[in-house]
Amino acid sequence: MTPHILTRSLDRAAATFILIVAALGILIPLSNLLLPQGSMFQVPTYLVALWGKYVCYAILALAIDLIWGYCGILSLGHGAFFALGGYAMGMYLMRQIGSRGVYGNPLLPDFMVFLNYPKLPWYWHGFDMFWFAALMVLVAPGLLAFCFGWLAFRSRVTGVYLSIITQAMTYALLLAFFRNDFGFGGNNGLTDFKDILGFNVQAEGTRCALFLLSCLALIIAFVICRAVVSSKLGKVLIAVRDAESRTRFLGYRVETYKLFVFTLSACMAGVAGALYVPQVGIINPSEFAPGNSIEAVIWVAVGGRGTLIGAALGAVVVNYAKTYFTSGPLAPYWLFMLGAMFILVTLLLPKGIVGTFNSWRDKQRSAAIEADKESAAREDGIGEPNPAE
Image (cartoon, rainbow, N blue to C red; front, top):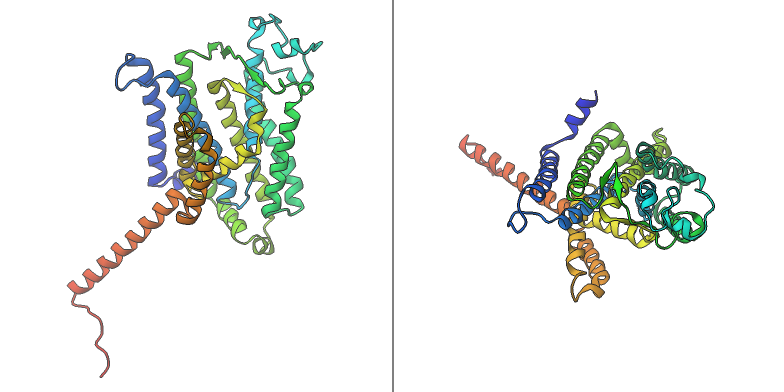
């Protein structure tokens, strides 16, 4: 049953997207590791890490598009789930430093020694094991999303009110993680990572492996999303998006469907955050900033809401533009440019880049089919009926 669902959910565009991501995930690391430095086709290590960050953002965009584009849940707090997954991985990386820290404490991270922590907090136990940290990458954001969604959806909070509540949630977490006594590094967050699974985080091979894993995670997340939206569950989600009251009247438990897809989306965002942290080298409370969640929504809108491929493409395009424009004299004006981009896309391309392209392609196909029908009719000698005299 499962292979049938996955096969049915992958059309030509989806298969092409998967092949492109897989090719990039293999070719870019090989170019970095095998080609000599200075070669025209050699990808520098810093670009491998940079594109790895873009891939993580693409996973986050997929998570948002799943709930917004197909279920109508506009979350302005998905950056919280992204950051929680990042903190779970960051805690594991901090425990791997051991006695190589500045203060040489084999058990406590440097910031705890500096703040005079007498012992390791109970919620840090277990993060010296990778499997436990990987489990928390899913459990922490998934549990928060489940509890939040259970309360919000049962209360039938929808629309702009739900968006405001999600934004308030991530802002509350921002304030909490800023506190030094919260046990997560305060304003500085977690950084100075050394190893992951025994491999040097800064090594070229490790960077390439992380990029490859990020591409693999993007493919898996995309296949899961396609399987969901192409199934009967996806049809119900679209019905909830377009006519929630009517769907509830037909007997569907709307709250259950929304809770499931919201929790799944949060887990995907957590995985994106976990892959993001070792490639960037730091995780701090600024990742909880509501502006980050709003920016992620803009990625989806630019690429094309309700297309999945467009969401991933929008994340890469917008963040590439951000990298390009914030490294020059236009850096102070980037936020204005981002806002102008969102307004222009909303006015001129309301379906986003991919959505607009799909609409144009469908019109071209329809016009070609009509032309073929007319040509076949003329060849058969069938014309328009003569008007009655």
